[in-house]
Image (cartoon, rainbow, N blue to C red):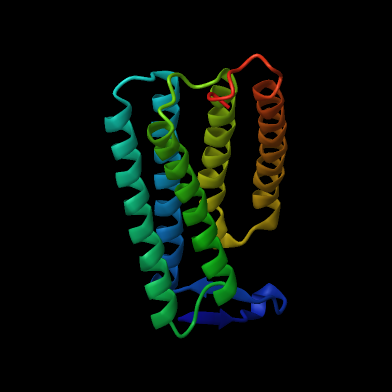
Amino acid sequence: MLRVARPASSGGSVKLKISHRAEEFFDLFQESTRNLRETTELLKDLIEDYQDVDLKVRRIRDREHEGDEVTHAIIRRLNTSFITPMDREDIYQLATALDDVLDAVDAVADLFLLHGIEAPLPQMKQQVDVLLRAAEQTEQAMRHLPKMDRERLQPYWVEINTLENEGDQIYRHAVAELFSGEHRAMDV
């Protein structure tokens, strides 16, 4: 339940108190971002210590399934809540965006098996470092989401956008190297 109180001493400002039920959304978002960070750490381990690939890919897949469960819990909660702490569309978009990133991490890990990758390119190590830093920033930002404090959240948005740009640049350089003629067509 969302309670609005207008204390006389506050000069008429509105103070919002979020109920326990609404806080469950934020707890689930924090669980989702923690899982995303931990899954990205598993991908980093796969790329940096390229052994036992089958086992490491299975661990990543298991974490992705855990992420699906959290996403389903958020959506179930959304479908059974009359009042939500944020717009329903925003809750849904945030939950599915986090799930999409986790799906992409799982897909990358799976491609190592499907394509029989012998060794990751150096750019993959750079890319996973950027992805992990973005996951860490997202996890930290999520701790501030319940207060909806834009000033506290903005540095995270800026840093995540900077990391996205860095990741895009690494990707473009990796593609350019793949097509530079130094790699066999089968490797590309």
